[in-house]
Length: 299
Image (cartoon, rainbow, N blue to C red; front, side, top):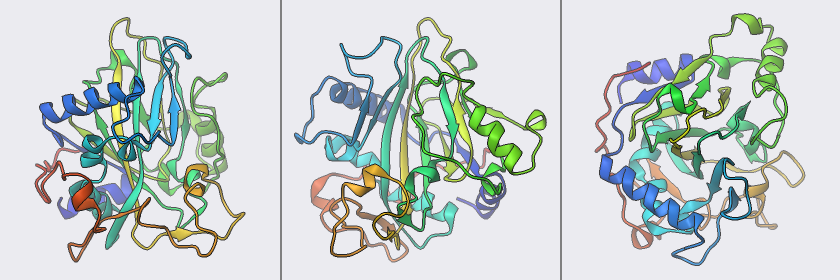
């Protein structure tokens, strides 16, 4: 990753990287995620969050699952990758990065929209409340499948957000964006909303304060899939009890101190080359350190 890419991320709040993963790696992730949605958990551990269950949800419901790494070691080899953590940390200027969240998304044909939101809104129980996400396309995402939408530069807005259920909004899915823009003294009518079209294996890195959402998938046959791997700073700890929101994180809080336990939030990379020790035995690292072909292609 070069300095101009880091500078562009600081200004725009996003960075597109082409061909982050190889086609066989993409296929491997999709196959393992399909197993999880069929309740085949390799480790016997259930995910932290799970929407779109076979036989229980509408056929067009968006499928979402969070906490994959504890369910399946193959998926862990990507979610806990030192290289992806290094890239996430480099963009944020962190000397170390911990696992934050890993989420699989699948919008089948006719899947409804996803509310505009900021990822940082869901980690305010942490100090600092900062997160960065590498969102990897697991299928080609032409406009016909409904695209991820972002507002470049919106990570620098002075505005607020609130926790909301993101799936199938009853109102315009961009309503939170209009409200945030107004609060930030930006004219909603002049916003530059960018639709991100990616090929399978390519990724977009998102600053945690960047506003993003997704439109409906109007395709009759194609499902749009992605894997979001989020990192938090290595120095992150919990806020005192009762401050902030982040219900997944709160499940792993120890009452005696504010430290994040490495069993649940391992250190994936630091500038000394260290990682939480158990990772070496738990899973392989699917991507060699500094092994990504980081092209200078930026939208």
